[in-house]
Image 1 (cartoon, rainbow, N blue to C red):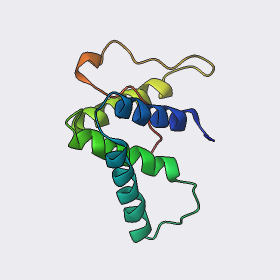
Image 2 (image 1 turned 90 degrees about the vertical axis):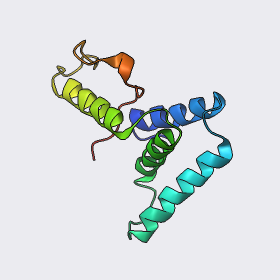
Image 3 (image 1 turned 135 degrees about the horizontal axis):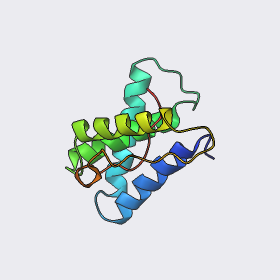
Length: 114
């Protein structure tokens, strides 16, 4: 079902946030439908290869709309993860360093490179 671990993590995060009442299933479905329509309007192929990228974009927009995080914090977290995996030796677990203020950031899920 998932080609890469980040896809499963994005899926699980959406499910968990919905279960915790941060948004309804109807709100989630609308956000994802909007993103898929926007992708189609941009002329992107509908072959499923980018489905979880669209999933993640919809989730980020919904998280922002609900005030759970903001684009700057999510961008900073993505950059921290990217820096961490670039500096982690092959075969070792990727961990965020203590230099980042994780109490201030809401997103723990790494995202795909864009």
